[in-house]
Length: 489
Image 1 (cartoon, rainbow, N blue to C red):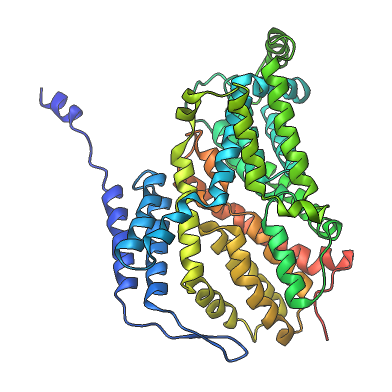
Image 2 (image 1 turned 90 degrees about the vertical axis):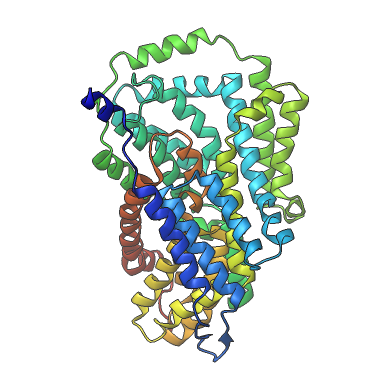
C-alpha cells in the first residue's frame, strides 16, 4: 500500500525553481549594483552605462536564463521582458510593448501562415513524397536531402519563410518514420538541422536575410566602398556550403538515426503521391501566391525602386489573399503557434531595449577595445565571437549594427582590412545555433516538440565551435587565396 502511495507521489522538479530564482537573482544583482565604469573607444569617446542601460542588461540576463532552462513557456518569458522594462522604468510601455508587433514579428507570422497553407492544401505532402522518391530510403540521405533543399531555398528567399515552408514538409516525412510524435534521434536531427542549415544557407546571398543589406550599408557609409550582390556571394558561397555538409556530418554523429533505412519508403511515397491525384485549385492558388511574393521580394535586391516596398507588407499580402480566396479560414488562426510568435516579440523588445539604452554599444566597445592591441587574427576572431554571442540573444541585424561600426573603426589601428571584418561578422551573425530566439527557424523547429531548449543550446554550442574553426580556416587560408584582403600596410 505504502509503495503504491509512494509511486503516486509526484517527484519535485528542483531545476525549475532553481533556475527561476537564478534569473531573478541575476536581474537584481545587475539592476541594483552601483554605477559601472564608462566604455572608452580608441578615439577617446566615452559611452556611459545609464541606469536604464544597466536595467536592459539585467532583463537580458533574466530572459536568457529562463529561455535556456525553459522555466516558463518561452512565450511567457517574452511577456516578462516587456513587463520588467515597464515596471522598472527602463523604457516606457509605448516602446516596450510596441516592439511586440514590430514588422519583423509580422513577417514571421506571415511566414508561418505560408507553412499552414502548404500543409492544409496538401502541397507539403506532395513535395515531401516527391523528395523521398528521389533521395530513397536511407535516413542519412533523407537528412542530406532535407538540408540541401533548405539551403538552396535560402538563396532566393528569406530564411524565415524557408523554415516555415520546409517545417510542414519535415512533419510529413517524420510521420513515415514509424514512431508517431515520439521524440527520437532522427526527429531531433531532422528539425534541428533545418534550423542550422537555414542559417548557413542564408549568408550566401542578400536574399536570405535582412542582415546582409544592413551590413553592406554600414560598410559603404564607414569605408566608402560597396560590396556588390555577387561579390558577397563569391566569398560566402564556399563557406556556406562547407557548413551545410559539415552540419550533415555533425548530425550523423550526434543524432544518428535509430534506423539506417525505412524499408519500402520509396514505394510508399510513390503510392501516397499517386493517391493525391492532380493539383487542386487551392494548391495552384497557394503556390502562385507564394511564388509571386518570393519573386517581388527577390527583385528588391536588383531594382532600387522596389526597395520602397516593405518586405513585411509584401509577404503579408499572401496572408490576405489566403483568406480572400478561402484557402484559410477563421479556424486556422487557432493553429498559429502563438508561443513562437511571442518568443520573437520578446526578442525584438529586448533587442531594441539594449540598442536604445546604449547598453549594447557599451558592451561592444568594452569587448572590442580589449583586443585593440591584439594580433590581427585574434582581433578578427574576437569580433566574430562577439557577434556570435549577441546574435543568439538579439536580432542578427542588431548584432551587426552594434558591432560592425565599432570594429571597422578599430581595424585600421591593427592594420586589418575592413573586408575581412565585414565578412567574418556576417558569417557569425547568420548562424545563431544556441538559443531559440537567435533566429526564427530555430523557434519554428522547436514547435516540433522533438527537442528541448536545453538540448538546442548544448549541441548548438558544439556546432558554434565548429563554425568558429571553419571561419578561422577561411580567414587564414581560403579567403586570401580567393583574393580577399586580410591585412593592410
